[in-house]
Length: 266
Image (tube, rainbow, N blue to C red):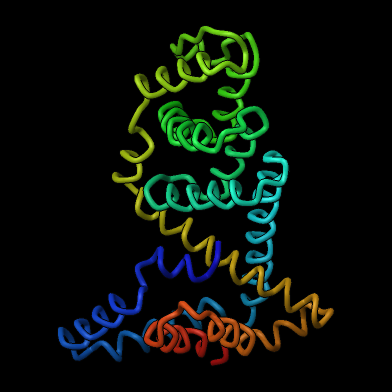
């Protein structure tokens, strides 16, 4: 996920972000103190002993995302435009379900091995999320059951009450799978994200995306410098420079982020 997309996802477009900051300043004289407290919290999180762990976690997050996206591209036989469209769908669904974009991308790659049409994959994925949510199973397992039912003669969804007919791989079979999933489980994924700790899970998934961005930066810097340790010594400078180069990042947003990045050096 690109950094610009992440900040747009979080609502940091320049106009809205600037207005939000101005309103916040007007409503409370403690705005500056709040930012200082936030910086202190981040500084505590990224204390010297934790920077290495955070770096490793970020690299792992980026590695997971990169592998999921690569698997999707291979399943699509190198159709980059379709891959990017499906990745965008995964990011969009992450904002309103409990599933991370990486989980969705892996499920998409399973479908893409048997279903070649972009629209068909897009229409199935939300239904598979509904199915996985209702039956409390991981998304990959749910997608695997759907692909087995679509591509083979056996109905792997039969035990869940989904009746399917038609030849393996046929449009008729796909249509029946879609209808069966929608009739039985439609709406479950989004509904689950709106209750309980759903909002926290969505936030955790967004945080993972931020780690992916940092992980990509770490890999890039490591390749240039040849040492992870060397990268850590220039982490603040590298992050700041990276953010400054993002043309879609607002001035106000960058100033806010600089205050956060400064905590890394404190």
